Length: 177
Image 1 (tube, rainbow, N blue to C red):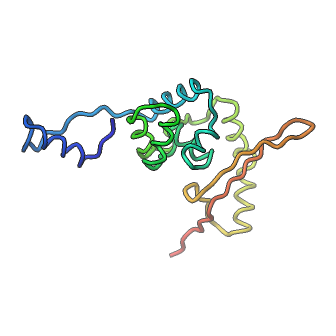
Image 2 (image 1 turned 180 degrees about the vertical axis):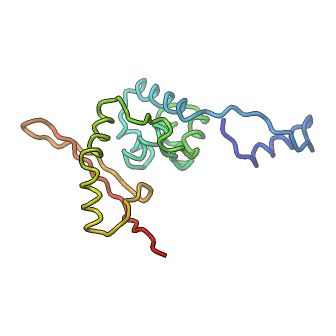
Image 3 (image 1 turned 90 degrees about the vertical axis):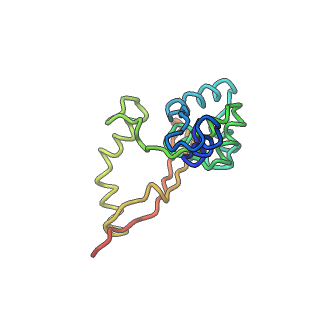
């Protein structure tokens, strides 16, 4: 269970055995993002549902909701409750889903998972090209991954279905001073 310091202090001061003690903070077990992800994946499998259905329940985009459920982002408390209600999970999962994430913490230096590696390969092969074209069009700077959206689509093609990924990030020019 995840609780704020104020909530823990309130609990401690309302307990007759610890009232008035400054060190009286109950020890609460916090669900990790890894445990959160395991719980959500198990419930998703049990319910035989999709990320799109979970995102619809949350009222958010499929990419962002999936990212939060995999531990890389956090949902607002209301959206987290909607997700856990849809999946039939306990309140502690909703609380963990609303906790800030340490982005990229679970990622290895270079993924061995083939799909994830291909994205790294795209950066290896096209990263310099992407940087050169962005800087030519916008000037020196970066694309935000904070003010950012992403969509993933299936494009049917007679030679084999294709993956279409649209990344839309705010350009942030380097400050000069």
